[in-house]
Amino acid sequence: MRIVLVEDNLQLATTIAEGLTEDGYTVHSVATAAGAIERGMRRDLDLMVLDLGLPDRDGIEVLRELRAARINVPVLVLTARDAVDARVAALDAGADDYLVKPFAFAELVARIAALARRAAGPRWAPASDVPLTMRDDLVIESGDRTVSLSPREYALFGCLLRRRGEVVARTEILRDAFGYEFDPGTNVIDVHLNHLRKKLQGFPVSIETVRGAGIRLVVAE
Ligand code: CA
Image 1 (cartoon, rainbow, N blue to C red):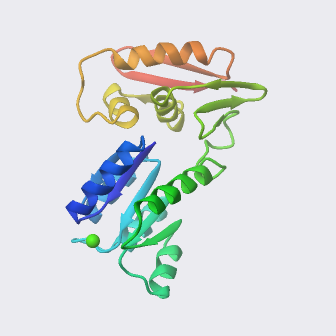
Image 2 (spheres, rainbow, N blue to C red):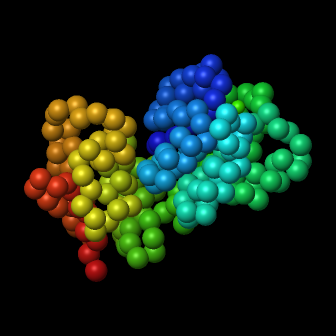
Image 3 (cartoon, protein in one colour):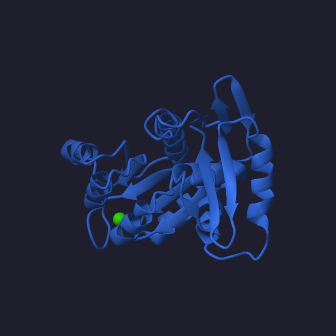
């Protein structure tokens, strides 16, 4: 699961990122509102942890911009502002949860897990036109059929499913599903694609390789 952590206190950001990484999350840290919006607009994150006091703009504005762009990723606001009206303002702007600093790391983790579970429901599930469900326990479900994926396969499938019908470039897949900002120069995508194709036999999707362009997931009518 990919978390974008928006926090300008670098020491705190490092501590949180290290803790979440140990818990198995993929964490991308950004320190500005502009960075948060840019990252959010890519639509490839599963959850955002958002500080409100940022150096360039208020975190509330990040929320408003993302929500205005219909980006419904769960957002957990993390801030030193503890007044009731500050919480209400954040929730009104589209926050899903709110945690006041200083906080216990265990509570942050518990809330992230809770948001992830909730997000696995209809709100962040694929659109209703897709006859399958990505469960948060890495199981893909379609009718009576289920298959269990590895975290990488699951991320790869989610990345393709979100952009179904489109050819997704390999560099985008590497970034979105694997967290690589660089090309590792291996056939890592193909290895996972092969596994995925085998596992998804009988499911109403097909994964096509478009030579020289990328990968496309097609959902059967
Ligand atoms: Ca701050």
